[in-house]
Amino acid sequence: MGKKHRARINSPKKNNHIPAETIVAEHEAHAKEHQASSGRKNNQQ
Image (cartoon, rainbow, N blue to C red):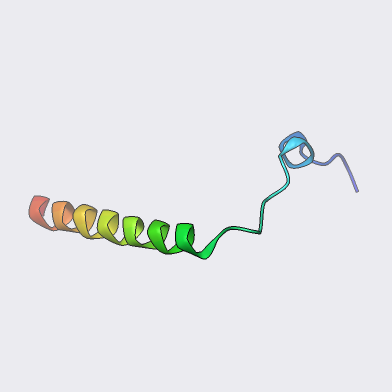
C-alpha cells in the first residue's frame, strides 16, 4: 500500500458536531464574500 501521508495521520480529528448557528453565520459570511469578489472581478474586465 505504501506510506500514508504524514499530514493525514497527524491531522486533528474533524469535529462534526457544530451548532447550527455557526453554520448559518458562516454561510452568510461566505455569501457576502462571494458577492464582493465577483463585483471586483467584473469591474476589472
